[in-house]
Length: 72
Image 1 (cartoon, one colour):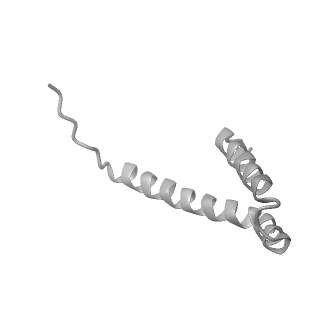
Image 2 (tube, rainbow, N blue to C red; image 1 turned 45 degrees about the vertical axis):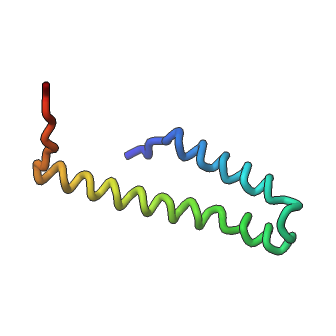
């Protein structure tokens, strides 16, 4: 199965790049290098949060939990 490319992931990656670019010269070089090196780990952490939320939503859908909507 081919993995779908999500546009928001590309935008998130660009946002991290901009964040690191803005930090350059503001924080000590050692700090900058550590933060820049952690980019992949931060993205993986965000992905794990999103994956868990997707699983929760899928379980709700399988249980047939529907939200009540009032119509006027």
